[in-house]
Length: 168
Ligand SMILES: [Zn+2]
Image 1 (cartoon, rainbow, N blue to C red):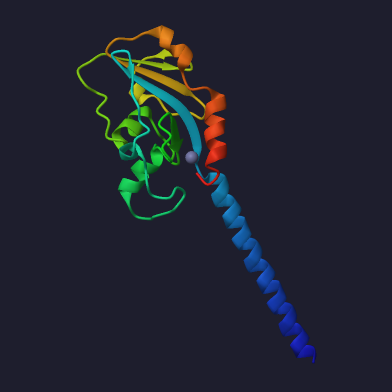
Image 2: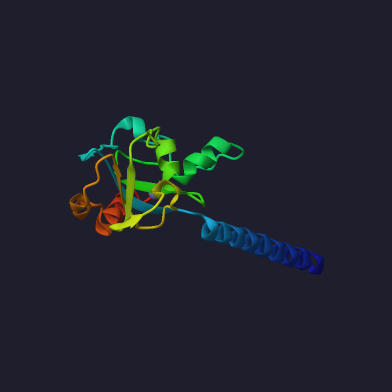
């Protein structure tokens, strides 16, 4: 009887320990998980580009971990989801704007002049600029027209997109 109680107690303690360790690592991992969004627009000679087409979308369900694939790590940095062509999802550290264009196969570093704005402020070397949460970026290829900045993606719009895709 006594031995049984001791075994039961030991088992109980063991289960609690394993359970809290598991919970701790899950929480820890969650805190480390990168996932944020930013708005962007690209104009080529004054014409707004539409990135909402299927060919720009990452079809893989977001948040799914696939280990050991470097290509995926690059895709995690910046991608588009669900037919939304003006809000970028960032799910890895160190993402720059050029990562987005690389990942959606949009040849941005052409011979033409590139002018970039972050939250309506002109930024040098926009492609090497980090993607930051809720930033709104406008990139002009060729002709730059600052008047168009007033149409840039708003924080409200980014939050709306976040609400629509809770799992992304
Ligand atoms: Zn997302």
